Length: 411
Image 1 (cartoon, rainbow, N blue to C red):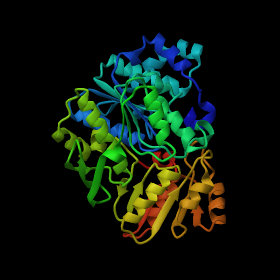
Image 2 (image 1 turned 180 degrees about the vertical axis):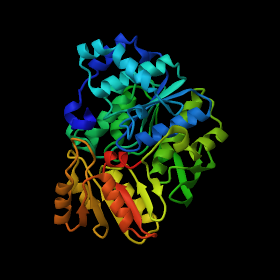
Image 3 (image 1 turned 135 degrees about the vertical axis):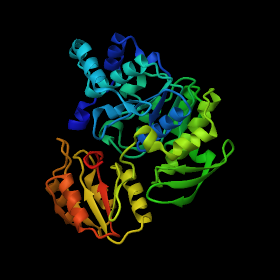
Image 4 (image 1 turned 30 degrees about the horizontal axis):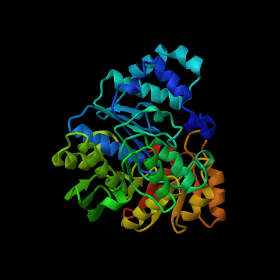
């Protein structure tokens, strides 16, 4: 529902989720969890942690959102999506409760995930926050560990329009006596995290301060990284090749250190193997994903200000002659702000993903052209991509993005 209509679908308390889960026998209390929040990177961090735990022999649940192609991507165990029959059975079995409580789409999905993970007796489940943290439906869990990746501007109409306000919502996942790992922090967000952690008597660690990571080599497919810290000194091959993944990688390594302290058996060989094959093990898609070579076609789900900035850094690091940008967006983003970040010297292919919230391609193009961009409008994402591929020469770069929902149509 949020996917379709945006902020109007959000329900700002935990009442429905708690009521639904009580009917289910409180499955969230029967499983061990790791809770992951943040403006950007929480999906990548969740998938990396899932790959590591899975490779270490743990039966690992993974709950993420949104999905790209199949609803069942949201609920996986050991990289395998929840069977379609189980999804149908859950809805049929609990149809009356759903009618009585009137939960949102997201609330039903969260309850479904907890129920499935409990029934399948997972050893641990990685639970990615949907939006914010404090009032997110996932925040009924008491995890083994909380992870906050970073704070940036996104969903300001719901979370607040200052970084401190947004950080306060994310910090809402910090629980009494539960350790928390923070990936990145800013001057205005640091006191929010430290104050909340102190209130909750939660040990807090900052990945940016504890780990030094050097890029040894980088291609469009992988990065070779050297790590130095008090608790780990090693080299890793990471199959998530975008430079923004270094920040996420640091948070993951710190989270692993916390899990090891709690008794989780994660050996360096398993850690190395998992990080070299995150996409294969966990099924992660859409993060600086190479779709084809000659011309090189890459897609990325980065869609807010920070996400787009990171995408542009990677484009700059990728060898190419001309740049072709297949771009679509949704209405509730600050489109002028995002457009102001994009390069004027690229060739643009404006399109709209197939959903109600999509910004019409012609409107997007009109706004972009008024700012000096050059490009054409296409009736669909696939038409735009096909045109870009036909236009591009072998040593050009075609980038597809602007919205998660645009990427969903090409992966």
